[in-house]
Length: 153
Image (cartoon, rainbow, N blue to C red; front, top):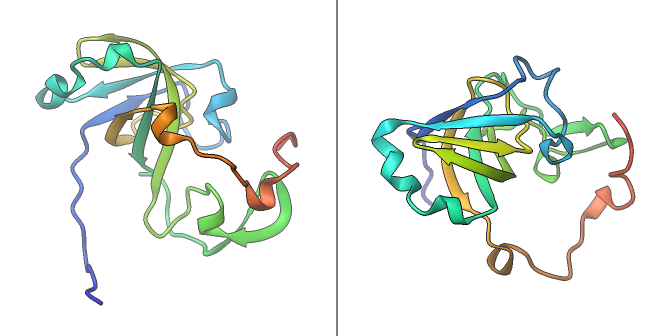
């Protein structure tokens, strides 16, 4: 098997959010009413053509403030430790974030969104339309999270 030693990623934009640090950000943005902006860099603005027709978009971003990682972590929903790949912890070997947000509107290269949990200044790596008929499957199993998502922090 071939090993990939390094990977170069080029951000397509930056997130402007009300959260200045990780402690201010919600555990999952979907439960938040806060509005954030995704500034797509001018050189990529044409790539936003027709995005206004979608109610939701998937955003892939880099946890730029995440330092180090843990292969086993505890989450806000369980006292029991779980493997990092069975969680959404930002402390990952490759610190990628992924979330589906509501697209409220577009003003040139700025997307106004609701439900984003990233902190201000987070680099955006990609944006894709969320399409339920392509992105959802059933039956869905949510593993160890079953019955735990109603818990508070």
